[in-house]
Image (cartoon, rainbow, N blue to C red; front, side):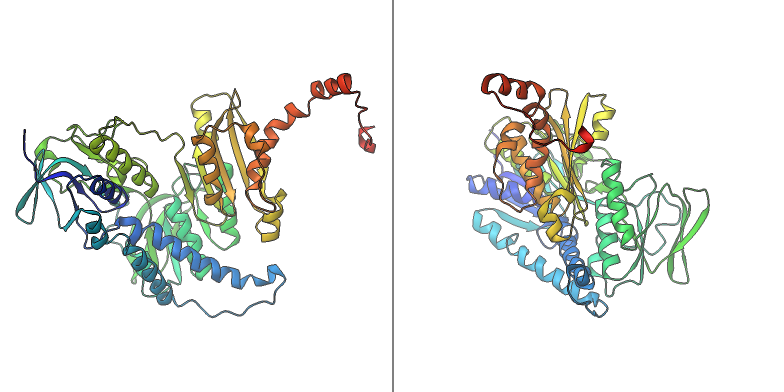
Length: 487
């Protein structure tokens, strides 16, 4: 039997890598974690989820102060935003979380941490700083990086990505956002609220193109009301620098050429897996420009080498990476043949109103030719939403022909939190009739979940058959009042 330095080797200290490393070490497997960057935590902690949500909160508070009159309060006078102070707060939050993702904590769990750029030299061996390290099993969880779209001149035009936007020295007076995915939409609204003039250039006919159009259009309308300008169906022909400013030249939806300039250009359109320098061709491991080629147990073409997180080219969410890290732990360490299942994987875009989704949306059901029904409940009928002054949005429940949930989308205040109840409902296989009968505290936003389930059950409960049965068996007497329009 071959002898290896470690039971498990992990490449990448983001969500997937940290999940596997901590679990593997605590189960008694000798584990090494290797991270290319000087700090653990991955893109999420330093350039993604954490700084973006911290920035969004600062922008939300500033926006709330400026709109104090909406809540029966005196109008507030506010000074312009000092972005350096916002950045200072972002760094403080990151440093607090960093303690949990530190080398010291990982070591306390029993795993070794090293920093540098590893490269495979054979199926079980990587080279790091001139030394070779062997492991029985490996996980490739090296994440992804921003990818520039094929726009002529863009590479030589001044631009920023998620790597720089949270650490700018000052708030830009104007900002062009190229792309309209989740991070693009979140940043467009946040910077508009902080005081930048923001324009979004999108190549397709809607923003958030993976979401249902009615939900995405509601988000766009909310951002337009806050001053964000959208250019949809834009065909970008060239990017260039003029007098120190980036310019995008594109044809708009009406066929007119637009020359759009701003102080900063944020490119938020596409990402690529960080696989280029790992020596994967040296060992004949199968992968593409999109990511690693994996089976449903997250194994590569070499069954003892696994993949997880953004490096797979799949679901680029931190919680997906954590889930996948756990699945690798089950397969590689516990030797349980676990297969990934993304059916109920949730995701959320943290704009205002928030948009959260789980399972299949209506667009997907149409593409698959499924027979389905749609049930909705508006936030404008929810008493807590009205009290909060945030009545925009709705919950949208998609049911199959047997009235079993296919998916849920929620647009509205705290949608990212509200979707969690549906994750539990789907995971626990809770019937809609059970959900409709549960007691939710009043007044809460969560009542909207109970209400939409009640909408599904109401036609059955209050049907003519039930009413006739009650009349026959218990001699009920029918209506006590009939509105004039029903007479």
